[in-house]
Amino acid sequence: MKKDDDRVFLYTDGACKGNPGPGGWAAVLIHPASGKRREIWGAVPSTTNNRMELTAVIEGLKLIVRPVDVEVVSDSRYVVQGMSEWIHDWIRRGWRTAAKKPVLNEDLWRELHRLAQERGNVRFRWVEGHAGHPENERCDRLAVRAYEEMLEREP
Image (cartoon, rainbow, N blue to C red; front, side):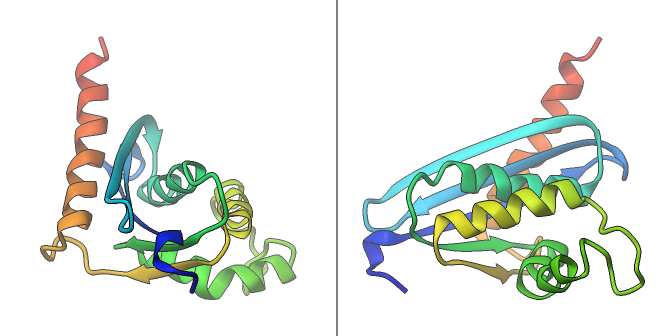
């Protein structure tokens, strides 16, 4: 781990009304050394919860412009296990699962893997969802708000 001024916490969440259905994603980036905080979110008319979970991390990592230590905190076991355990085997097998089936959401996994490689030391940590973790709860509210506002704008 680098010195603390080179550390960023990236909290993420995705939400979907139906699966598939309209979905939202959100990310909160915190740089403890400077006290800077940034919140981003977005929505998609038709998607899945897993795609929104992945999108939240991708969009958050895109905001980090130089190599730093990043701790991604997510309530998605899919994202955390995917990046911590499964991805190396998927790549080795040509983006196939152990059952020799195509990896779902391969496009997003490839982009997330590329961004994680470029950003420096990126670690993934799972937290229980809806368990009172302030930043996780904030991401959840932002992700839901993103798709709700999108639905309100639709004719």
